[in-house]
Image (cartoon, rainbow, N blue to C red; front, side, top):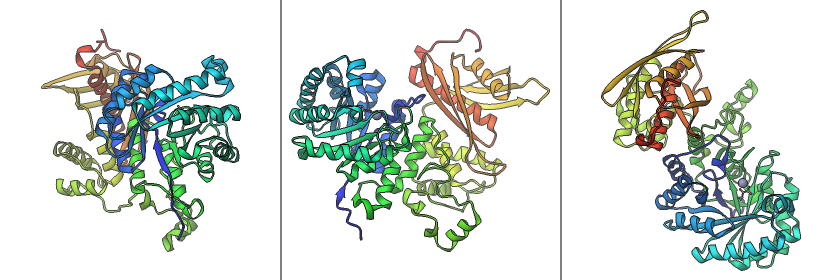
Amino acid sequence: MADTSKRIYIFDTTLRDGEQSPGVSLNIQEKLEIARQLARLGVDVIEAGFPIASPGDFEAVRAVAREVEGPVIAGLARMNDRDIDRAWEALQEAQKPRIHVFIATSDIHLKYKLRMSRQEVLEAVRRGVARARGYCQDIEFSPEDAVRSDLDFLCQVLATAIEAGATVLNIPDTVGYATPEEFGRLISQIRQRVPGIDKVRISVHCHNDLGLAVANSLAAIENGALQVEGAINGIGERAGNAALEEVIMALYTRRDYYGCRTGIVTEEIYRTSKLVSSLTGMPVQYNKAIVGKNAFTHESGIHQDGVLKERTTYEIMNPAMIGLVQNNIFLGKHSGRHALRSRLEELGFKLTEAELDKAFARFKELADRKKEISDRDLEAIVEHEVKHIPEKFVLEHIHISTGNRVVPTATMGIRVGEELKEEAACGEGPVDAAFKAIDKLTRIPVCLKSYNLNAVTGGKDAVGEVTVKIEYDGRVFIGRGISTDVLEASARAYLNAINKVVYEVGEENLQQASTAQ
Ligand code: KIV
Ligand code: ZN
């Protein structure tokens, strides 16, 4: 039996660094939904955002702090009074608040970005950490770009932060530059050289520019780090952060080697990954470790044969450990509401009556066109079409005429309250025609930024899952739609994004397109 007495704390920054991924923008409802799921997953800390960054960020941190119980809720602040005060304003209602203050310490950042001397940085750390500590008992300090900082200066800054009241020292590899041996050595040197280090917890925050974020985080744990920061699916600035599900499952699967445990409910990993991917619009690469579509799929005959005889021949983890339940019993058009409810509950979805009504209606529509509805289809229905914001525009009907020798034309019917509105438009292709017809109907000046189509399950009657990103007034909104008909899925996704614009901007503030886009 492995000795796993060392407890590693998991700090999730999906909502802060993760949301800094290019093109990702989450609204408050979406952030709350992810934060609640992270609490079910059992993370120790949720970094809910950067309150000074925008009023939306502030409100989201405040909402998570008020409503999500269990984990510590952290908010990020630069080392200045305004940031720190604003972070505290957002966090003060949390059961367990943490202010996370940071300032860069590498010469390159001091010279070109901060234009500060080392002495000025030391003074800012002393003042800033003490100010934050005046508000809250739990203070995390990060010397940004620690890996490229001069070691003597870094140790001096860390000692100053401890003296001023920091309780967690986070060592970021901001630009993903370190190798595992180097990073492990850095943590070990910090432990040997910084006075007072035994009074605080060492944390690490690794970026993935060289694909080493998880390896570096694990090397840090071997050298005494007790907290690991990262994001679900490894999302984040540039190439992203350490993928938390990989760190967690490495610690669990190789507990014989690392001798550590976490407080994570690993069975919630798969669902958390799906939720984050769906709400951020960032697909998970098929061969991604732990949560990729192929991570537990065996293609070669020899492997299939081995796994059928004994799963552990080719599987080092049981897929059930991450909550991936393989279910071969399908629901179909004769299945009732009760069967749907119990299958959804087995999949971990607890829906309100109104949500179940909506799920059931979409399930019946789909079952009319597709013989067997799989668990993945049901997940797609719930994640994409049920847990949603109020809809001003509801798709009623869509007719598209297309071919290689005709001009693609879409005729669309949309319900707006009691009224059914209809329009037709031509386009470069059928999707373009459908979106133009929707633009004519909604008259909201949006611009399509990206379009992504995926099959949820295999087969000719596979459910198509479309994700679109649109821009309105400089802000990005993500919409999703599913159907066995990819054109209908496209129209649903586009309308979903437009409904988000209406919901978030408010009908009274909407600009109107003078003519169709
Ligand atoms: O990458 C980084 O250095 C950060 C800090 C704010 C911790 O995200
Ligand atoms: Zn970062």
